[in-house]
Image (cartoon, rainbow, N blue to C red):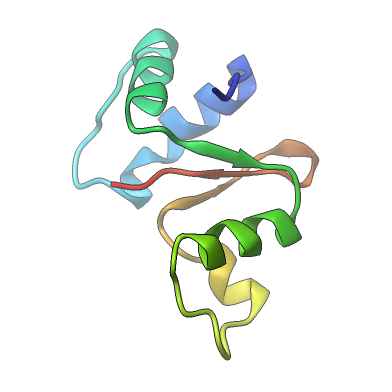
Length: 87
């Protein structure tokens, strides 16, 4: 199970509308519960992010790293990490 820092949770709260049409959480506690419930994943690098999508069956042929990072389910975290939230 992932452990989300307070900074990670705040970033998700601030940017959740990039993926959802309306807020799914209003507090850090609600954000943590939501992310755990939907089994959100934190990847520690762009390589790990790409590997996650490949293992999930996404066809990444021809997709640049920039295009991958622009996907609505990808949230850039501090330290070159990425949060993936599947809706």
